[in-house]
Image (tube, rainbow, N blue to C red; front, side, top):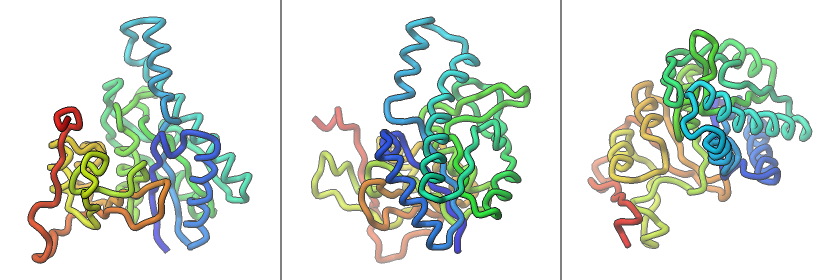
Length: 263
């Protein structure tokens, strides 16, 4: 039995049907005996829609009010996923970032996580519930809603995994792992079974966009095993840890590039 934090991005929860598929996957992990904390992003396109609404009202909105608006995207998703899990017979409890509580600094739109209170989550897990947490958000010491910036749900998941001392943090995306290069550009690209945090950071700095750089840095700092998986296909994905590759592995893990430059 393991404690696993799973993160599902916008495309993974982009419709009611996709949310139902996520719920089925989560329930299977629970049936296998694992404790599960789920972190979700807003539904695909929702953050952009909210941002466009804000800019239509005010081209330069105040950071605090923008955070109040943008955080509602994840609040919708945690409620819908929790409702789905319970409708399927699995007890669940949803939390916004401020309810957990994920304490951040007061840098609106680009806040940094300072501390996480894991008491509520641990109690729910011990009661047999799936915990569903809104990614991308937290609150400052004054109780103001804050957001972590684009891709912040990855960082939320890793931070929760670190706080809970989880056995693994699984990042579900629309790709089934980390590849030697972009498989959409180079069909011969090979999926990597295992790489180190340092190699992942280097690939990210060169243009690979599978994971947010901050989340990889956070995972490396707190030694949280990361696994990149697909929401749409089965497979073992790519495990990212601090362990060095064996001597038989190739010295070059991958090549990343900007698709525009590759044209």
